[in-house]
Length: 263
Image (cartoon, rainbow, N blue to C red; front, side, top):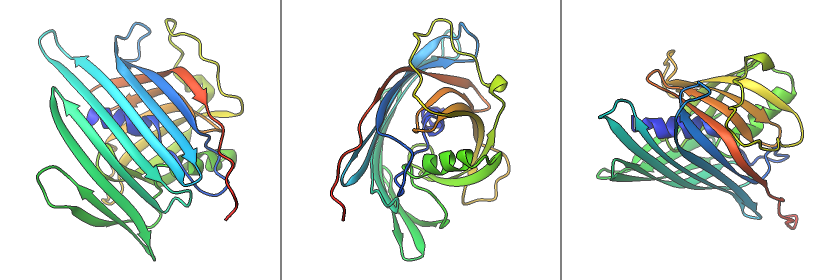
Protein backbone atom coordinates (compact mmCIF):
# COMPACT_ATOMS: atom_id res chain seq x y z
CA UNK A 1 0.00 0.00 0.00
CA UNK A 2 3.00 2.34 0.37
CA UNK A 3 3.15 2.42 -3.42
CA UNK A 4 -0.43 3.63 -3.77
CA UNK A 5 0.65 7.26 -3.48
CA UNK A 6 3.25 6.73 -6.18
CA UNK A 7 0.75 4.93 -8.42
CA UNK A 8 -1.55 7.95 -8.31
CA UNK A 9 1.26 10.38 -9.05
CA UNK A 10 2.88 8.32 -11.77
CA UNK A 11 -0.52 8.22 -13.42
CA UNK A 12 -1.25 11.85 -12.76
CA UNK A 13 1.78 13.13 -14.50
CA UNK A 14 4.37 11.88 -17.06
CA UNK A 15 6.20 15.36 -18.23
CA UNK A 16 9.16 16.88 -20.56
CA UNK A 17 11.77 19.42 -21.56
CA UNK A 18 12.78 18.72 -25.12
CA UNK A 19 13.22 21.35 -27.82
CA UNK A 20 9.80 22.44 -29.08
CA UNK A 21 8.09 21.11 -25.95
CA UNK A 22 4.29 21.20 -25.87
CA UNK A 23 4.00 21.19 -22.09
CA UNK A 24 3.38 24.56 -20.46
CA UNK A 25 4.23 25.52 -16.87
CA UNK A 26 1.19 25.14 -14.63
CA UNK A 27 -0.09 24.34 -11.16
CA UNK A 28 -2.94 21.85 -10.88
CA UNK A 29 -4.75 20.62 -7.77
CA UNK A 30 -6.73 17.37 -7.81
CA UNK A 31 -9.33 15.82 -5.53
CA UNK A 32 -8.64 12.13 -4.85
CA UNK A 33 -11.47 9.66 -4.27
CA UNK A 34 -11.65 5.96 -3.56
CA UNK A 35 -13.65 4.33 -6.33
CA UNK A 36 -15.41 5.46 -9.49
CA UNK A 37 -18.95 5.97 -8.18
CA UNK A 38 -20.39 9.49 -8.23
CA UNK A 39 -20.63 9.29 -4.44
CA UNK A 40 -17.11 7.86 -3.93
CA UNK A 41 -15.55 9.16 -0.69
CA UNK A 42 -12.89 11.83 -0.94
CA UNK A 43 -9.58 10.56 0.45
CA UNK A 44 -7.18 13.43 -0.16
CA UNK A 45 -5.58 15.90 -2.54
CA UNK A 46 -2.71 15.98 -5.02
CA UNK A 47 -0.88 19.12 -6.18
CA UNK A 48 1.25 19.11 -9.33
CA UNK A 49 3.41 22.22 -9.68
CA UNK A 50 5.53 22.50 -12.83
CA UNK A 51 7.57 25.67 -13.33
CA UNK A 52 10.16 26.68 -15.92
CA UNK A 53 13.06 29.10 -15.79
CA UNK A 54 16.03 29.65 -18.08
CA UNK A 55 17.88 26.77 -16.38
CA UNK A 56 15.18 24.18 -16.93
CA UNK A 57 12.11 22.58 -15.39
CA UNK A 58 11.24 22.39 -11.70
CA UNK A 59 8.72 19.75 -10.71
CA UNK A 60 7.00 19.60 -7.31
CA UNK A 61 4.26 17.20 -6.33
CA UNK A 62 2.51 16.95 -3.00
CA UNK A 63 -0.08 14.29 -2.27
CA UNK A 64 -1.94 13.57 0.95
CA UNK A 65 -4.41 10.74 1.50
CA UNK A 66 -6.20 8.90 4.28
CA UNK A 67 -7.77 5.61 3.25
CA UNK A 68 -10.22 3.60 5.36
CA UNK A 69 -10.57 0.13 3.83
CA UNK A 70 -12.55 -1.12 6.84
CA UNK A 71 -14.06 0.51 9.92
CA UNK A 72 -10.99 -0.41 11.98
CA UNK A 73 -8.25 -0.32 9.32
CA UNK A 74 -7.08 3.10 8.14
CA UNK A 75 -3.93 4.22 6.41
CA UNK A 76 -2.47 7.70 6.13
CA UNK A 77 -0.18 8.22 3.14
CA UNK A 78 1.72 11.26 1.92
CA UNK A 79 4.40 11.92 -0.68
CA UNK A 80 6.40 14.98 -1.69
CA UNK A 81 8.61 15.15 -4.77
CA UNK A 82 11.04 17.94 -5.63
CA UNK A 83 12.85 17.48 -8.94
CA UNK A 84 14.88 19.43 -11.48
CA UNK A 85 15.34 18.62 -15.15
CA UNK A 86 17.33 20.61 -17.73
CA UNK A 87 15.65 21.63 -20.97
CA UNK A 88 17.76 19.06 -22.81
CA UNK A 89 15.94 16.25 -20.97
CA UNK A 90 19.27 14.47 -20.43
CA UNK A 91 19.24 14.47 -16.62
CA UNK A 92 16.99 14.50 -13.57
CA UNK A 93 17.79 15.18 -9.91
CA UNK A 94 15.19 14.71 -7.21
CA UNK A 95 14.29 14.05 -3.61
CA UNK A 96 11.17 12.20 -2.48
CA UNK A 97 9.77 12.11 1.05
CA UNK A 98 7.08 9.52 1.78
CA UNK A 99 5.18 9.20 5.06
CA UNK A 100 3.02 6.20 5.95
CA UNK A 101 1.13 6.29 9.26
CA UNK A 102 3.71 8.70 10.67
CA UNK A 103 6.76 6.72 9.48
CA UNK A 104 8.92 8.87 7.16
CA UNK A 105 11.35 7.75 4.47
CA UNK A 106 13.42 9.95 2.15
CA UNK A 107 14.90 8.98 -1.20
CA UNK A 108 17.34 10.98 -3.32
CA UNK A 109 18.40 10.24 -6.84
CA UNK A 110 19.97 11.46 -10.02
CA UNK A 111 19.83 10.25 -13.59
CA UNK A 112 22.38 11.45 -16.14
CA UNK A 113 22.91 10.66 -19.80
CA UNK A 114 26.65 10.12 -20.30
CA UNK A 115 27.77 9.29 -23.79
CA UNK A 116 25.64 6.39 -24.96
CA UNK A 117 24.53 5.37 -21.46
CA UNK A 118 21.79 6.59 -19.13
CA UNK A 119 23.09 6.10 -15.58
CA UNK A 120 21.03 6.26 -12.39
CA UNK A 121 22.04 6.50 -8.73
CA UNK A 122 19.37 6.14 -6.05
CA UNK A 123 20.09 6.67 -2.35
CA UNK A 124 17.63 4.97 0.03
CA UNK A 125 17.49 5.11 3.83
CA UNK A 126 19.96 2.84 5.61
CA UNK A 127 21.68 1.45 2.54
CA UNK A 128 24.42 2.13 -0.01
CA UNK A 129 23.61 3.97 -3.26
CA UNK A 130 21.92 1.80 -5.88
CA UNK A 131 23.64 2.38 -9.22
CA UNK A 132 22.37 0.95 -12.50
CA UNK A 133 22.02 1.68 -16.23
CA UNK A 134 18.62 2.47 -17.73
CA UNK A 135 17.56 1.57 -21.28
CA UNK A 136 18.79 4.37 -23.62
CA UNK A 137 15.28 5.40 -24.83
CA UNK A 138 14.11 6.11 -21.25
CA UNK A 139 12.57 9.59 -21.00
CA UNK A 140 12.93 11.82 -17.98
CA UNK A 141 9.84 12.91 -16.03
CA UNK A 142 9.85 16.22 -17.90
CA UNK A 143 10.26 14.49 -21.44
CA UNK A 144 7.55 11.84 -21.39
CA UNK A 145 4.37 13.90 -21.82
CA UNK A 146 5.87 15.73 -24.76
CA UNK A 147 6.45 12.37 -26.37
CA UNK A 148 2.90 11.37 -25.45
CA UNK A 149 1.43 14.56 -26.94
CA UNK A 150 3.54 14.37 -30.10
CA UNK A 151 2.47 10.78 -30.76
CA UNK A 152 -1.19 11.63 -30.14
CA UNK A 153 -0.94 14.65 -32.44
CA UNK A 154 0.53 12.33 -35.08
CA UNK A 155 -2.64 10.20 -34.72
CA UNK A 156 -0.83 7.16 -33.29
CA UNK A 157 -3.59 4.91 -31.95
CA UNK A 158 -1.25 3.00 -29.62
CA UNK A 159 2.46 3.18 -28.81
CA UNK A 160 4.99 2.37 -26.06
CA UNK A 161 7.22 4.73 -24.05
CA UNK A 162 9.88 4.27 -21.39
CA UNK A 163 9.77 6.78 -18.51
CA UNK A 164 11.93 7.16 -15.42
CA UNK A 165 9.80 7.14 -12.27
CA UNK A 166 11.01 8.84 -9.08
CA UNK A 167 8.12 7.93 -6.77
CA UNK A 168 6.97 4.35 -7.20
CA UNK A 169 10.11 2.36 -8.06
CA UNK A 170 13.02 4.72 -8.67
CA UNK A 171 13.41 2.93 -12.00
CA UNK A 172 11.98 2.86 -15.52
CA UNK A 173 8.37 2.17 -16.39
CA UNK A 174 7.32 0.76 -19.75
CA UNK A 175 4.07 2.53 -20.59
CA UNK A 176 1.73 1.21 -23.26
CA UNK A 177 -0.54 4.03 -24.43
CA UNK A 178 -3.83 3.52 -26.30
CA UNK A 179 -6.12 6.33 -27.44
CA UNK A 180 -9.74 5.66 -26.47
CA UNK A 181 -13.10 6.75 -27.72
CA UNK A 182 -14.31 9.82 -25.85
CA UNK A 183 -17.41 7.86 -24.80
CA UNK A 184 -15.12 5.56 -22.75
CA UNK A 185 -13.85 8.44 -20.61
CA UNK A 186 -15.08 8.50 -17.02
CA UNK A 187 -17.82 11.06 -16.42
CA UNK A 188 -17.24 14.17 -14.35
CA UNK A 189 -18.37 14.16 -10.71
CA UNK A 190 -21.71 15.91 -10.08
CA UNK A 191 -20.34 17.37 -6.84
CA UNK A 192 -17.18 18.84 -8.39
CA UNK A 193 -16.82 22.52 -9.01
CA UNK A 194 -16.59 23.17 -12.75
CA UNK A 195 -13.01 23.94 -13.81
CA UNK A 196 -12.44 25.75 -17.08
CA UNK A 197 -10.79 23.29 -19.47
CA UNK A 198 -7.47 24.38 -20.96
CA UNK A 199 -7.76 25.65 -24.52
CA UNK A 200 -6.64 23.37 -27.30
CA UNK A 201 -7.03 19.71 -28.19
CA UNK A 202 -7.41 16.80 -25.78
CA UNK A 203 -7.34 13.01 -26.02
CA UNK A 204 -8.78 10.29 -23.76
CA UNK A 205 -6.10 7.62 -23.23
CA UNK A 206 -5.60 4.34 -21.44
CA UNK A 207 -2.10 3.47 -20.16
CA UNK A 208 -0.63 0.35 -18.59
CA UNK A 209 2.57 0.52 -16.49
CA UNK A 210 5.03 -2.39 -16.27
CA UNK A 211 8.65 -2.62 -15.14
CA UNK A 212 10.91 -1.20 -17.84
CA UNK A 213 14.13 -3.13 -17.18
CA UNK A 214 12.50 -6.55 -16.76
CA UNK A 215 10.47 -8.46 -19.28
CA UNK A 216 7.32 -8.35 -17.15
CA UNK A 217 4.09 -8.83 -19.03
CA UNK A 218 1.62 -8.20 -16.20
CA UNK A 219 1.03 -4.47 -15.57
CA UNK A 220 1.62 -3.11 -12.08
CA UNK A 221 -1.26 -0.71 -12.58
CA UNK A 222 -3.26 1.07 -15.27
CA UNK A 223 -4.41 4.66 -15.76
CA UNK A 224 -7.19 6.25 -17.76
CA UNK A 225 -6.98 10.01 -18.30
CA UNK A 226 -7.86 12.99 -20.43
CA UNK A 227 -4.63 14.51 -21.81
CA UNK A 228 -4.54 18.12 -23.04
CA UNK A 229 -2.02 19.33 -25.58
CA UNK A 230 -0.39 21.68 -23.04
CA UNK A 231 0.40 18.84 -20.61
CA UNK A 232 -2.55 19.19 -18.23
CA UNK A 233 -4.28 15.95 -17.23
CA UNK A 234 -7.80 15.45 -15.84
CA UNK A 235 -10.31 12.74 -14.94
CA UNK A 236 -7.71 10.17 -13.97
CA UNK A 237 -8.66 6.64 -12.96
CA UNK A 238 -5.86 4.58 -11.41
CA UNK A 239 -6.42 0.81 -11.07
CA UNK A 240 -3.87 -0.94 -8.83
CA UNK A 241 -5.53 -4.36 -8.61
CA UNK A 242 -6.32 -3.73 -4.93
CA UNK A 243 -8.12 -0.41 -5.14
CA UNK A 244 -9.32 2.16 -7.65
CA UNK A 245 -8.35 5.78 -7.04
CA UNK A 246 -9.69 8.66 -9.11
CA UNK A 247 -8.26 12.18 -9.46
CA UNK A 248 -10.29 15.12 -10.72
CA UNK A 249 -9.01 18.60 -11.48
CA UNK A 250 -10.14 21.18 -8.91
CA UNK A 251 -8.03 24.24 -9.68
CA UNK A 252 -5.71 25.09 -12.56
CA UNK A 253 -3.26 27.96 -12.97
CA UNK A 254 -1.42 28.26 -16.29
CA UNK A 255 1.89 30.11 -16.14
CA UNK A 256 3.83 31.98 -18.82
CA UNK A 257 7.10 30.54 -20.11
CA UNK A 258 10.18 32.66 -19.34
CA UNK A 259 11.87 34.83 -21.94
CA UNK A 260 15.43 33.51 -22.04
CA UNK A 261 18.43 34.66 -24.09
CA UNK A 262 19.46 32.36 -26.88
CA UNK A 263 22.60 30.37 -26.14
